[in-house]
Image (cartoon, rainbow, N blue to C red):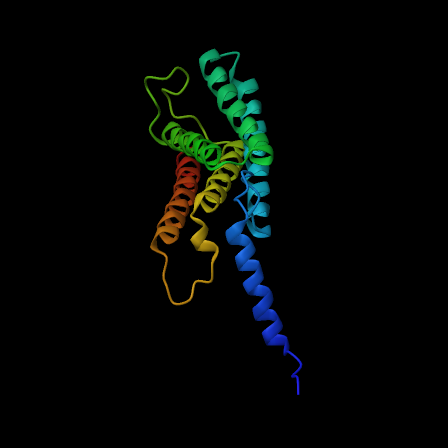
Length: 197
């Protein structure tokens, strides 16, 4: 008497077929071919944050270019980088593109922190500590969110697998650095308001 195959047996057979097909099919050259829904949404989120930060840097360029042309050109440069990065995240989201854009944005955050706390004596227009404006804080949070999202995007694929009992130290360390960046931004804001309020 023939037994009707159970649902579990059918599922195991189908999974074996899928595994066999994945081993025989060549890997796609497209960077988004095996992208999960969550990773794709994070990528879009990073692009939006980078684009918003770029627009705010354009506004900063307009505000500074008349009395500090060099500083205005610097704002224009970082705005162009962030807007182009946002576009590349949508059309060519390769790891090197993500990493370079995140590094440039992180550098912009560091420069801003120094410009609002100590000043940068060797750069025209940043020798004196400038008062904090609402645009500064909003821009930095857009940049910080973009960097945080980019960190998630460049993490190895293994972090998207079931975690089990294993504790991943690298993501914890990276997110801790992002949290410290947020604290630094808040410190600059409160420091400025304490001395100028």
